Length: 534
Image 1: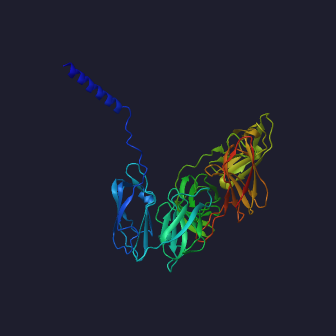
Image 2: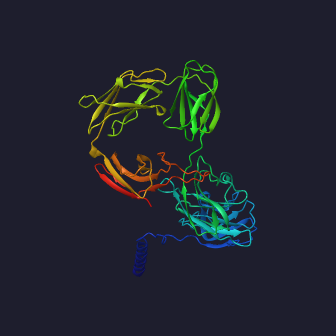
Image 3: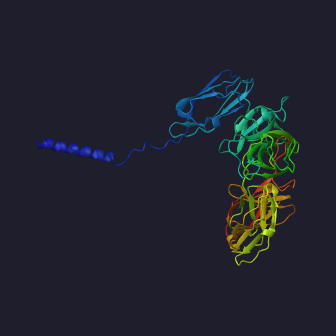
Protein backbone atom coordinates (compact mmCIF):
# COMPACT_ATOMS: atom_id res chain seq x y z
CA UNK A 1 0.00 0.00 0.00
CA UNK A 2 2.89 2.39 0.86
CA UNK A 3 4.46 1.52 -2.50
CA UNK A 4 1.25 2.49 -4.33
CA UNK A 5 1.07 5.78 -2.45
CA UNK A 6 4.68 6.57 -3.32
CA UNK A 7 4.07 5.75 -6.97
CA UNK A 8 1.02 8.05 -6.98
CA UNK A 9 3.05 10.91 -5.48
CA UNK A 10 5.78 10.47 -8.08
CA UNK A 11 3.25 10.45 -10.93
CA UNK A 12 1.53 13.61 -9.60
CA UNK A 13 4.93 15.33 -9.27
CA UNK A 14 5.84 14.52 -12.84
CA UNK A 15 2.50 15.86 -14.09
CA UNK A 16 2.92 19.11 -12.09
CA UNK A 17 6.44 19.52 -13.45
CA UNK A 18 5.27 19.00 -17.01
CA UNK A 19 2.45 21.51 -16.55
CA UNK A 20 4.89 23.99 -15.01
CA UNK A 21 7.27 23.60 -17.91
CA UNK A 22 4.46 24.00 -20.38
CA UNK A 23 3.29 27.25 -18.77
CA UNK A 24 6.69 28.96 -18.69
CA UNK A 25 6.09 30.62 -22.06
CA UNK A 26 3.21 31.30 -24.48
CA UNK A 27 3.62 29.83 -27.96
CA UNK A 28 4.12 32.60 -30.56
CA UNK A 29 3.17 30.55 -33.60
CA UNK A 30 6.63 30.81 -35.11
CA UNK A 31 8.22 33.68 -37.05
CA UNK A 32 6.01 36.19 -38.85
CA UNK A 33 5.27 35.36 -42.48
CA UNK A 34 7.02 37.99 -44.62
CA UNK A 35 7.10 36.01 -47.87
CA UNK A 36 4.89 37.12 -50.76
CA UNK A 37 2.59 34.58 -52.40
CA UNK A 38 4.06 32.66 -55.33
CA UNK A 39 2.41 31.88 -58.66
CA UNK A 40 2.11 28.16 -59.35
CA UNK A 41 0.75 28.33 -62.89
CA UNK A 42 -1.48 30.31 -65.23
CA UNK A 43 -4.07 29.20 -67.74
CA UNK A 44 -3.34 30.25 -70.45
CA UNK A 45 0.34 30.66 -69.62
CA UNK A 46 1.70 34.19 -69.19
CA UNK A 47 3.01 35.72 -72.45
CA UNK A 48 0.72 33.55 -74.56
CA UNK A 49 0.45 34.46 -78.27
CA UNK A 50 -2.55 34.02 -80.59
CA UNK A 51 -4.84 34.46 -77.59
CA UNK A 52 -8.46 33.71 -78.52
CA UNK A 53 -10.11 33.01 -75.17
CA UNK A 54 -12.30 34.98 -72.78
CA UNK A 55 -11.04 33.64 -69.44
CA UNK A 56 -7.70 33.70 -67.59
CA UNK A 57 -6.93 31.97 -64.30
CA UNK A 58 -3.78 32.52 -62.21
CA UNK A 59 -3.04 30.00 -59.40
CA UNK A 60 -1.02 30.70 -56.22
CA UNK A 61 0.73 28.54 -53.62
CA UNK A 62 -1.36 29.95 -50.76
CA UNK A 63 -4.62 31.76 -50.13
CA UNK A 64 -4.57 35.32 -51.48
CA UNK A 65 -6.87 38.37 -51.55
CA UNK A 66 -7.28 41.12 -54.13
CA UNK A 67 -7.39 44.62 -52.60
CA UNK A 68 -8.05 48.08 -54.03
CA UNK A 69 -8.23 46.64 -57.54
CA UNK A 70 -10.01 49.68 -59.02
CA UNK A 71 -6.95 51.87 -58.39
CA UNK A 72 -4.21 49.29 -58.71
CA UNK A 73 -5.13 47.32 -61.86
CA UNK A 74 -3.92 48.98 -65.07
CA UNK A 75 -4.85 47.38 -68.40
CA UNK A 76 -2.92 48.47 -71.47
CA UNK A 77 -4.38 49.10 -74.00
CA UNK A 78 -7.48 50.14 -72.01
CA UNK A 79 -10.66 48.16 -72.61
CA UNK A 80 -14.01 49.81 -73.32
CA UNK A 81 -15.74 47.29 -71.05
CA UNK A 82 -13.81 46.44 -67.90
CA UNK A 83 -13.02 42.75 -67.31
CA UNK A 84 -14.56 40.90 -64.38
CA UNK A 85 -11.93 39.94 -61.78
CA UNK A 86 -12.80 37.53 -58.94
CA UNK A 87 -12.65 36.97 -56.07
CA UNK A 88 -12.57 40.44 -54.51
CA UNK A 89 -12.01 40.78 -50.75
CA UNK A 90 -12.32 37.04 -50.04
CA UNK A 91 -9.57 34.43 -49.81
CA UNK A 92 -8.83 32.15 -52.73
CA UNK A 93 -5.92 30.25 -54.27
CA UNK A 94 -6.53 31.73 -57.70
CA UNK A 95 -7.56 34.89 -59.57
CA UNK A 96 -10.12 34.56 -62.35
CA UNK A 97 -10.31 37.16 -65.17
CA UNK A 98 -13.30 37.25 -67.53
CA UNK A 99 -12.73 39.44 -70.60
CA UNK A 100 -15.94 41.30 -71.48
CA UNK A 101 -14.60 43.34 -74.41
CA UNK A 102 -13.80 42.53 -78.02
CA UNK A 103 -10.02 42.34 -78.35
CA UNK A 104 -8.15 44.07 -81.17
CA UNK A 105 -6.27 41.88 -83.63
CA UNK A 106 -2.46 41.60 -83.49
CA UNK A 107 -2.32 43.52 -80.22
CA UNK A 108 -0.36 42.87 -77.03
CA UNK A 109 -2.38 43.34 -73.82
CA UNK A 110 -0.84 43.78 -70.35
CA UNK A 111 -2.68 43.44 -67.01
CA UNK A 112 -0.57 45.13 -64.31
CA UNK A 113 -1.98 44.36 -60.86
CA UNK A 114 0.22 46.84 -58.96
CA UNK A 115 0.19 45.86 -55.30
CA UNK A 116 -3.40 44.58 -55.25
CA UNK A 117 -2.51 40.87 -54.75
CA UNK A 118 -1.68 40.04 -51.10
CA UNK A 119 -1.56 36.85 -49.05
CA UNK A 120 -4.55 36.19 -46.82
CA UNK A 121 -2.83 36.25 -43.42
CA UNK A 122 -0.14 38.95 -43.33
CA UNK A 123 -1.13 40.76 -46.55
CA UNK A 124 2.36 40.52 -48.03
CA UNK A 125 1.99 41.96 -51.55
CA UNK A 126 2.96 40.30 -54.80
CA UNK A 127 4.58 43.44 -56.21
CA UNK A 128 3.52 44.60 -59.66
CA UNK A 129 2.47 41.25 -61.09
CA UNK A 130 1.86 41.59 -64.82
CA UNK A 131 -0.02 39.17 -67.04
CA UNK A 132 0.66 39.64 -70.76
CA UNK A 133 -0.82 38.06 -73.87
CA UNK A 134 -1.03 38.82 -77.58
CA UNK A 135 -3.82 38.29 -80.05
CA UNK A 136 -1.15 38.06 -82.75
CA UNK A 137 1.90 35.93 -83.45
CA UNK A 138 4.30 37.77 -81.14
CA UNK A 139 4.52 39.85 -77.95
CA UNK A 140 5.28 43.55 -78.46
CA UNK A 141 8.28 44.35 -76.26
CA UNK A 142 9.15 48.03 -76.76
CA UNK A 143 8.97 50.62 -73.95
CA UNK A 144 8.75 54.35 -73.26
CA UNK A 145 10.27 55.45 -69.95
CA UNK A 146 10.39 58.68 -67.99
CA UNK A 147 9.46 60.56 -64.82
CA UNK A 148 6.61 62.72 -63.56
CA UNK A 149 7.31 66.01 -61.79
CA UNK A 150 4.99 68.85 -60.80
CA UNK A 151 5.27 72.14 -62.68
CA UNK A 152 4.37 74.14 -59.55
CA UNK A 153 4.65 72.02 -56.41
CA UNK A 154 7.70 70.37 -54.89
CA UNK A 155 6.29 66.85 -55.22
CA UNK A 156 4.06 65.33 -57.91
CA UNK A 157 0.69 63.69 -57.33
CA UNK A 158 0.33 59.96 -56.87
CA UNK A 159 -1.73 57.71 -59.15
CA UNK A 160 -0.87 59.58 -62.34
CA UNK A 161 -1.93 57.94 -65.62
CA UNK A 162 0.74 58.09 -68.32
CA UNK A 163 -0.59 57.46 -71.82
CA UNK A 164 0.44 57.03 -75.43
CA UNK A 165 -1.93 58.10 -78.23
CA UNK A 166 -1.16 56.57 -81.60
CA UNK A 167 -0.54 59.14 -84.33
CA UNK A 168 -2.66 57.90 -87.22
CA UNK A 169 -5.26 59.32 -89.61
CA UNK A 170 -7.81 59.71 -86.79
CA UNK A 171 -5.56 61.62 -84.36
CA UNK A 172 -6.22 65.33 -83.74
CA UNK A 173 -5.30 67.74 -80.94
CA UNK A 174 -8.71 67.08 -79.36
CA UNK A 175 -8.30 63.28 -79.27
CA UNK A 176 -7.33 63.30 -75.59
CA UNK A 177 -10.69 64.89 -74.70
CA UNK A 178 -12.74 62.16 -76.41
CA UNK A 179 -10.86 58.88 -76.78
CA UNK A 180 -8.92 56.47 -74.60
CA UNK A 181 -5.19 56.10 -75.33
CA UNK A 182 -3.53 53.25 -77.19
CA UNK A 183 -1.28 52.35 -74.22
CA UNK A 184 -1.31 53.31 -70.56
CA UNK A 185 0.52 52.88 -67.27
CA UNK A 186 0.15 54.45 -63.82
CA UNK A 187 2.62 55.70 -61.22
CA UNK A 188 0.37 54.29 -58.45
CA UNK A 189 0.94 55.56 -54.92
CA UNK A 190 4.71 55.41 -54.45
CA UNK A 191 6.45 56.03 -57.77
CA UNK A 192 7.42 59.05 -59.86
CA UNK A 193 9.10 56.99 -62.59
CA UNK A 194 7.04 55.32 -65.29
CA UNK A 195 7.53 52.69 -67.96
CA UNK A 196 4.92 52.00 -70.63
CA UNK A 197 5.78 48.48 -71.77
CA UNK A 198 4.71 45.94 -74.40
CA UNK A 199 4.08 48.55 -77.08
CA UNK A 200 4.68 48.25 -80.81
CA UNK A 201 6.84 50.45 -83.00
CA UNK A 202 5.19 53.65 -84.13
CA UNK A 203 4.69 57.36 -83.49
CA UNK A 204 2.81 58.51 -80.40
CA UNK A 205 1.75 61.52 -78.32
CA UNK A 206 2.90 61.15 -74.70
CA UNK A 207 0.45 62.60 -72.15
CA UNK A 208 0.05 62.33 -68.35
CA UNK A 209 -3.20 62.88 -66.45
CA UNK A 210 -4.04 63.14 -62.78
CA UNK A 211 -7.71 62.26 -63.15
CA UNK A 212 -10.74 62.67 -60.95
CA UNK A 213 -13.10 60.24 -62.71
CA UNK A 214 -10.65 57.67 -64.11
CA UNK A 215 -12.04 57.53 -67.67
CA UNK A 216 -8.65 58.15 -69.36
CA UNK A 217 -9.86 61.33 -71.09
CA UNK A 218 -8.92 64.92 -70.24
CA UNK A 219 -11.51 66.98 -68.31
CA UNK A 220 -10.12 70.52 -68.08
CA UNK A 221 -12.21 71.57 -65.07
CA UNK A 222 -10.99 68.76 -62.81
CA UNK A 223 -7.85 67.08 -64.20
CA UNK A 224 -4.17 67.98 -64.10
CA UNK A 225 -2.24 67.37 -67.31
CA UNK A 226 1.30 67.15 -68.63
CA UNK A 227 2.73 66.31 -72.04
CA UNK A 228 5.92 65.78 -73.94
CA UNK A 229 6.51 68.32 -76.68
CA UNK A 230 6.21 66.93 -80.21
CA UNK A 231 5.80 63.22 -80.80
CA UNK A 232 7.56 60.10 -79.50
CA UNK A 233 8.92 57.68 -82.09
CA UNK A 234 9.24 54.11 -80.80
CA UNK A 235 11.69 52.43 -80.44
CA UNK A 236 13.44 55.14 -78.42
CA UNK A 237 16.22 55.35 -75.84
CA UNK A 238 15.08 58.80 -74.63
CA UNK A 239 14.03 59.38 -71.02
CA UNK A 240 11.03 61.71 -70.89
CA UNK A 241 10.23 64.21 -68.13
CA UNK A 242 6.60 65.30 -67.92
CA UNK A 243 5.52 68.29 -65.83
CA UNK A 244 1.98 68.14 -64.45
CA UNK A 245 -0.08 71.33 -64.17
CA UNK A 246 -3.67 72.51 -63.82
CA UNK A 247 -4.77 74.44 -66.88
CA UNK A 248 -6.44 77.82 -66.47
CA UNK A 249 -10.14 76.99 -66.85
CA UNK A 250 -11.91 78.46 -69.87
CA UNK A 251 -14.31 81.24 -68.86
CA UNK A 252 -17.98 80.38 -68.42
CA UNK A 253 -20.77 82.37 -66.75
CA UNK A 254 -23.36 80.71 -64.53
CA UNK A 255 -27.06 81.46 -64.17
CA UNK A 256 -27.61 84.59 -62.03
CA UNK A 257 -29.35 84.38 -58.66
CA UNK A 258 -31.03 87.06 -56.55
CA UNK A 259 -29.34 86.86 -53.13
CA UNK A 260 -30.64 90.10 -51.52
CA UNK A 261 -32.67 93.14 -52.42
CA UNK A 262 -31.04 94.88 -55.42
CA UNK A 263 -28.15 92.38 -55.34
CA UNK A 264 -27.62 89.57 -57.89
CA UNK A 265 -24.92 86.89 -57.74
CA UNK A 266 -23.22 85.98 -61.02
CA UNK A 267 -21.15 82.82 -60.67
CA UNK A 268 -18.39 82.03 -63.15
CA UNK A 269 -15.52 79.70 -64.01
CA UNK A 270 -12.11 80.94 -65.15
CA UNK A 271 -10.67 84.46 -65.04
CA UNK A 272 -13.20 87.16 -64.11
CA UNK A 273 -10.97 90.22 -64.57
CA UNK A 274 -12.31 91.07 -68.04
CA UNK A 275 -15.88 90.00 -67.20
CA UNK A 276 -18.57 92.63 -67.89
CA UNK A 277 -22.28 92.49 -67.01
CA UNK A 278 -24.91 94.56 -68.80
CA UNK A 279 -28.67 94.49 -68.26
CA UNK A 280 -30.75 94.69 -71.44
CA UNK A 281 -34.01 96.53 -71.88
CA UNK A 282 -35.47 99.65 -70.33
CA UNK A 283 -33.85 100.89 -67.14
CA UNK A 284 -35.35 103.21 -64.50
CA UNK A 285 -34.22 106.82 -64.33
CA UNK A 286 -30.90 107.28 -62.53
CA UNK A 287 -30.02 103.59 -62.89
CA UNK A 288 -26.61 102.80 -61.39
CA UNK A 289 -24.63 99.63 -60.65
CA UNK A 290 -21.60 98.38 -58.71
CA UNK A 291 -19.77 95.05 -59.07
CA UNK A 292 -17.83 93.44 -56.19
CA UNK A 293 -15.88 90.17 -56.16
CA UNK A 294 -17.11 87.77 -53.48
CA UNK A 295 -14.06 86.99 -51.27
CA UNK A 296 -14.89 83.31 -50.73
CA UNK A 297 -16.29 82.06 -54.07
CA UNK A 298 -16.05 82.48 -57.84
CA UNK A 299 -18.89 84.99 -57.87
CA UNK A 300 -19.38 88.65 -58.80
CA UNK A 301 -22.03 90.54 -56.83
CA UNK A 302 -24.01 92.90 -59.04
CA UNK A 303 -25.63 95.77 -57.10
CA UNK A 304 -28.18 98.08 -58.71
CA UNK A 305 -30.42 101.01 -57.86
CA UNK A 306 -33.16 102.07 -57.90
CA UNK A 307 -35.42 99.06 -57.45
CA UNK A 308 -36.57 97.39 -60.69
CA UNK A 309 -40.31 96.85 -60.89
CA UNK A 310 -40.50 94.32 -63.75
CA UNK A 311 -40.46 90.56 -63.11
CA UNK A 312 -37.45 89.57 -65.23
CA UNK A 313 -34.57 90.81 -67.35
CA UNK A 314 -31.81 89.56 -69.59
CA UNK A 315 -28.13 90.15 -68.92
CA UNK A 316 -25.32 90.03 -71.47
CA UNK A 317 -22.04 88.62 -70.09
CA UNK A 318 -18.85 89.35 -72.01
CA UNK A 319 -15.25 88.36 -71.33
CA UNK A 320 -12.75 88.89 -74.15
CA UNK A 321 -14.16 86.61 -76.89
CA UNK A 322 -16.90 85.15 -74.65
CA UNK A 323 -20.50 86.41 -75.08
CA UNK A 324 -23.64 84.94 -73.53
CA UNK A 325 -27.16 86.12 -72.67
CA UNK A 326 -28.64 84.96 -69.37
CA UNK A 327 -32.22 85.22 -68.11
CA UNK A 328 -32.95 86.43 -64.58
CA UNK A 329 -36.16 86.59 -62.56
CA UNK A 330 -36.24 89.25 -59.83
CA UNK A 331 -37.29 88.40 -56.28
CA UNK A 332 -38.64 90.91 -53.78
CA UNK A 333 -36.45 90.29 -50.73
CA UNK A 334 -34.87 92.52 -48.11
CA UNK A 335 -31.71 94.48 -48.81
CA UNK A 336 -28.52 93.90 -46.85
CA UNK A 337 -27.83 96.07 -43.80
CA UNK A 338 -24.61 98.08 -43.76
CA UNK A 339 -22.04 96.37 -41.52
CA UNK A 340 -18.43 97.55 -41.48
CA UNK A 341 -15.70 95.33 -40.10
CA UNK A 342 -11.92 95.20 -39.91
CA UNK A 343 -10.14 92.73 -42.17
CA UNK A 344 -6.84 93.22 -40.36
CA UNK A 345 -6.03 91.53 -37.08
CA UNK A 346 -5.37 93.54 -33.94
CA UNK A 347 -1.61 93.00 -34.42
CA UNK A 348 -0.18 94.77 -37.46
CA UNK A 349 3.13 94.12 -39.16
CA UNK A 350 5.25 97.23 -39.70
CA UNK A 351 4.54 97.15 -43.46
CA UNK A 352 0.88 96.19 -43.17
CA UNK A 353 -2.03 98.60 -43.73
CA UNK A 354 -5.17 98.58 -41.61
CA UNK A 355 -8.03 97.32 -43.80
CA UNK A 356 -11.82 97.56 -43.64
CA UNK A 357 -14.66 96.08 -45.68
CA UNK A 358 -18.45 96.42 -45.71
CA UNK A 359 -21.50 94.33 -46.56
CA UNK A 360 -22.56 96.92 -49.19
CA UNK A 361 -20.23 98.57 -51.75
CA UNK A 362 -18.46 101.65 -50.36
CA UNK A 363 -18.85 104.79 -52.48
CA UNK A 364 -17.16 107.31 -50.15
CA UNK A 365 -14.21 106.89 -47.81
CA UNK A 366 -13.48 110.33 -46.37
CA UNK A 367 -10.24 110.76 -44.35
CA UNK A 368 -11.58 114.05 -42.90
CA UNK A 369 -13.75 111.97 -40.54
CA UNK A 370 -10.94 109.58 -39.51
CA UNK A 371 -8.43 109.97 -36.66
CA UNK A 372 -5.54 107.75 -35.56
CA UNK A 373 -4.08 108.17 -32.06
CA UNK A 374 -0.97 106.45 -30.72
CA UNK A 375 -0.47 105.31 -27.12
CA UNK A 376 0.46 108.88 -26.12
CA UNK A 377 -2.81 110.15 -27.67
CA UNK A 378 -0.81 111.90 -30.38
CA UNK A 379 -2.34 112.17 -33.84
CA UNK A 380 -0.72 109.93 -36.43
CA UNK A 381 -0.57 110.93 -40.09
CA UNK A 382 -2.12 108.47 -42.53
CA UNK A 383 -3.25 107.93 -46.12
CA UNK A 384 -6.37 106.15 -47.35
CA UNK A 385 -7.11 104.11 -50.45
CA UNK A 386 -9.98 102.02 -51.77
CA UNK A 387 -10.17 99.01 -54.15
CA UNK A 388 -13.71 98.92 -55.63
CA UNK A 389 -13.72 95.34 -57.01
CA UNK A 390 -12.69 94.02 -53.57
CA UNK A 391 -14.76 96.60 -51.63
CA UNK A 392 -11.71 97.08 -49.43
CA UNK A 393 -10.69 100.35 -47.75
CA UNK A 394 -7.11 100.73 -46.48
CA UNK A 395 -5.44 103.10 -44.03
CA UNK A 396 -1.63 103.34 -44.27
CA UNK A 397 0.46 104.88 -41.50
CA UNK A 398 3.96 104.63 -40.03
CA UNK A 399 4.24 102.32 -37.03
CA UNK A 400 6.83 102.04 -34.26
CA UNK A 401 7.92 99.09 -32.13
CA UNK A 402 5.59 98.06 -29.29
CA UNK A 403 3.09 100.63 -30.45
CA UNK A 404 -0.62 100.77 -29.79
CA UNK A 405 -3.08 102.70 -31.95
CA UNK A 406 -6.72 103.68 -31.86
CA UNK A 407 -8.46 104.24 -35.20
CA UNK A 408 -11.69 106.27 -34.98
CA UNK A 409 -14.10 106.78 -37.87
CA UNK A 410 -16.84 109.35 -37.16
CA UNK A 411 -20.25 109.25 -38.88
CA UNK A 412 -19.79 110.20 -42.53
CA UNK A 413 -16.38 108.58 -42.94
CA UNK A 414 -17.98 105.77 -44.98
CA UNK A 415 -21.01 105.97 -47.24
CA UNK A 416 -22.38 102.95 -49.08
CA UNK A 417 -24.02 102.44 -52.48
CA UNK A 418 -27.51 103.08 -51.07
CA UNK A 419 -26.56 106.25 -49.17
CA UNK A 420 -26.17 104.71 -45.72
CA UNK A 421 -23.41 106.13 -43.52
CA UNK A 422 -21.48 104.59 -40.67
CA UNK A 423 -22.06 105.03 -36.99
CA UNK A 424 -18.98 105.98 -34.95
CA UNK A 425 -16.42 103.19 -35.33
CA UNK A 426 -13.45 102.50 -33.10
CA UNK A 427 -10.72 99.96 -33.76
CA UNK A 428 -7.54 99.07 -31.90
CA UNK A 429 -4.24 97.90 -33.31
CA UNK A 430 -0.78 97.22 -31.94
CA UNK A 431 2.70 96.31 -33.11
CA UNK A 432 5.38 93.97 -31.79
CA UNK A 433 9.14 94.57 -31.65
CA UNK A 434 11.48 94.01 -34.58
CA UNK A 435 13.01 91.15 -32.59
CA UNK A 436 9.68 89.31 -32.75
CA UNK A 437 10.10 88.83 -36.50
CA UNK A 438 12.50 87.07 -38.83
CA UNK A 439 14.46 88.55 -41.75
CA UNK A 440 15.70 86.80 -44.86
CA UNK A 441 18.08 87.90 -47.64
CA UNK A 442 17.95 85.82 -50.82
CA UNK A 443 20.52 85.78 -53.60
CA UNK A 444 19.69 84.15 -56.94
CA UNK A 445 22.24 82.60 -59.27
CA UNK A 446 21.87 81.38 -62.85
CA UNK A 447 18.37 82.85 -63.38
CA UNK A 448 16.76 84.75 -66.24
CA UNK A 449 14.79 87.86 -65.30
CA UNK A 450 11.99 88.82 -64.72
CA UNK A 451 11.37 86.58 -61.70
CA UNK A 452 8.95 86.20 -58.80
CA UNK A 453 10.50 85.09 -55.51
CA UNK A 454 8.02 83.45 -53.16
CA UNK A 455 8.08 82.19 -49.58
CA UNK A 456 5.43 79.57 -48.89
CA UNK A 457 4.33 77.63 -45.84
CA UNK A 458 4.69 73.85 -45.61
CA UNK A 459 1.39 73.46 -47.49
CA UNK A 460 2.94 75.61 -50.26
CA UNK A 461 0.51 78.49 -49.77
CA UNK A 462 2.22 81.75 -50.76
CA UNK A 463 2.86 83.98 -47.74
CA UNK A 464 5.31 86.54 -49.15
CA UNK A 465 6.53 87.38 -52.63
CA UNK A 466 8.61 89.92 -54.52
CA UNK A 467 8.93 90.67 -58.24
CA UNK A 468 12.02 91.90 -60.08
CA UNK A 469 12.76 92.48 -63.75
CA UNK A 470 16.46 93.12 -63.21
CA UNK A 471 19.10 91.45 -61.05
CA UNK A 472 19.04 92.42 -57.37
CA UNK A 473 19.01 91.07 -53.81
CA UNK A 474 15.67 90.06 -52.30
CA UNK A 475 15.24 91.23 -48.72
CA UNK A 476 12.21 89.87 -46.87
CA UNK A 477 11.87 91.80 -43.62
CA UNK A 478 9.62 91.35 -40.60
CA UNK A 479 8.46 87.85 -41.50
CA UNK A 480 6.21 86.05 -39.08
CA UNK A 481 8.31 83.32 -37.42
CA UNK A 482 7.82 79.91 -39.01
CA UNK A 483 9.15 77.42 -41.52
CA UNK A 484 9.20 78.42 -45.17
CA UNK A 485 9.84 76.93 -48.57
CA UNK A 486 11.55 79.15 -51.14
CA UNK A 487 10.69 79.02 -54.84
CA UNK A 488 11.47 81.20 -57.86
CA UNK A 489 9.16 81.65 -60.85
CA UNK A 490 10.84 82.53 -64.15
CA UNK A 491 8.15 85.01 -65.22
CA UNK A 492 8.78 84.80 -68.97
CA UNK A 493 5.99 87.23 -69.97
CA UNK A 494 6.55 89.61 -67.03
CA UNK A 495 2.90 89.64 -65.93
CA UNK A 496 3.86 89.14 -62.26
CA UNK A 497 2.10 85.79 -61.89
CA UNK A 498 2.80 82.13 -62.63
CA UNK A 499 1.23 80.94 -65.87
CA UNK A 500 0.39 77.25 -66.21
CA UNK A 501 0.72 75.45 -69.51
CA UNK A 502 -1.95 74.90 -72.13
CA UNK A 503 -2.34 71.61 -73.98
CA UNK A 504 -4.08 72.80 -77.14
CA UNK A 505 -1.45 75.46 -77.78
CA UNK A 506 1.30 73.01 -76.68
CA UNK A 507 2.64 75.59 -74.23
CA UNK A 508 4.48 74.37 -71.15
CA UNK A 509 4.13 76.04 -67.75
CA UNK A 510 6.48 78.81 -66.70
CA UNK A 511 9.50 77.32 -64.99
CA UNK A 512 9.75 77.18 -61.18
CA UNK A 513 12.92 76.49 -59.21
CA UNK A 514 12.83 75.26 -55.60
CA UNK A 515 15.29 75.68 -52.76
CA UNK A 516 15.91 72.10 -51.59
CA UNK A 517 15.48 72.63 -47.84
CA UNK A 518 12.78 73.88 -45.49
CA UNK A 519 14.01 77.22 -44.10
CA UNK A 520 13.62 77.89 -40.37
CA UNK A 521 12.62 81.54 -39.97
CA UNK A 522 12.99 82.05 -36.23
CA UNK A 523 12.18 85.25 -34.38
CA UNK A 524 15.21 87.51 -34.18
CA UNK A 525 17.12 85.56 -36.86
CA UNK A 526 18.60 87.04 -40.03
CA UNK A 527 18.99 84.33 -42.67
CA UNK A 528 21.08 84.59 -45.85
CA UNK A 529 20.05 82.12 -48.56
CA UNK A 530 21.60 81.46 -51.96
CA UNK A 531 19.53 79.65 -54.59
CA UNK A 532 21.31 78.36 -57.68
CA UNK A 533 19.03 77.17 -60.45
CA UNK A 534 20.23 74.26 -62.54
